[in-house]
Length: 414
Ligand code: FAD
Ligand code: PYC
Image 1 (cartoon, rainbow, N blue to C red):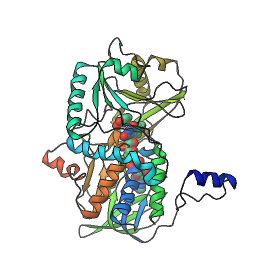
Image 2: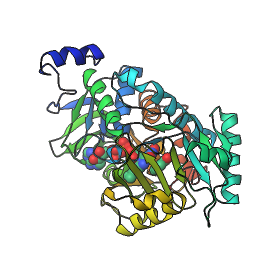
Image 3: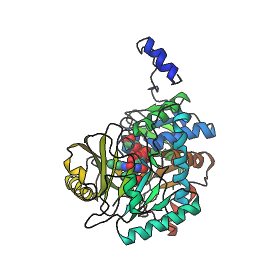
Image 4: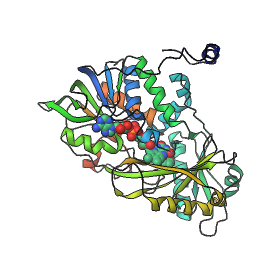
């Protein structure tokens, strides 16, 4: 793999940038792989990467029906944090956040991780008590968060109206090393590293069927022909239910649209991320100057990657009360993705009823932050059959009633 560095940029500048290699190969699919991963989003690519890097399993194909990173990985609002309540969640999200800290160096690819700090506003007494509880839990879990008062909120983010008429800001749960990263770059960085390890990323290759013999997976049918495999990982976010049906089992997942929008670019006015969950809105400023805005998920199941119009209005209306300056901005564009929701708002990282077939899904509205941690844990599960980080998130928890309730920490109304 050609290394990216300041010297490489200087060298290429001298020869009119004619020497850059393609970041990843586009091979024809082979007949068989040790492992096939369905879905070249962040989680599928990270799973493949850690299978190769941590476990030496490199005869791997990642199959993608569209283009890599074109699902939720390239559609999210890039918030990274680990301020969850339950121990199992704090462990995997904090592992993930810490992997983000060194991801650019690990992958030799600038993912623009920006630990600018994330605050979750408390705008009711109930919410304040909830975040105080999370701050205490995080203290015991080794996750650095604190509850801050309204004056500190205003100091960190001057454009907030803390004395709003309906929902004054009573404080916030503050995680200073949380932040954002460039979402496409995360997918591209993993893809480049996977390709460099000899793995095949096959785009425009839709999985249409899953084959098995005597209860064990044997391969997949695809739009580019059959591909045999020893192990199969289903990592398809909002389409996980469709794939599990092909494998002959059902998942406790609902697919709904979540959308986001950005304003016209403005001068720097906000260098933290703010989530205002009582009013259902969140806000940050991109490096290009756009205000990045999101709200709650649509209230009905569907597979359209658009989102409904009334949600845009609701989100902006809610946020204007806390951020009055937004009312003067023109909105530039809006988009949506299909998120995969479980009942307890925690992911599923698990073996499945079909031997050799594993599932990684249920990240819902909050899986961008989890990409490296999830890939690390899923790779361990697929390679070794067990993983300390993944095991609490097995499918069996739904049968056992052992829910990992993160409906508050999920941070987005649903
Ligand atoms: P995806 O990136 O969706 O990848 C799955 C891939 O599987 C897709 O590329 C799809 O084409 C492919 N696929 C599906 N079916 C098949 C098939 N049959 N054959 C082959 N390929 C198939 N999370 C955060 O942590 N922070 C945020 O700020 C945040 N904001 C969000 C905002 C929005 C608007 C949305 C929609 C989501 C947001 N999320 C956020 C959630 C986050 O984006 C997802 O949880 C995460 O990206 C899921 O990654 P993934 O790799 O599992 O899925
Ligand atoms: O999980 O932090 C999050 C998030 C923010 C916006 C959407 N999801």
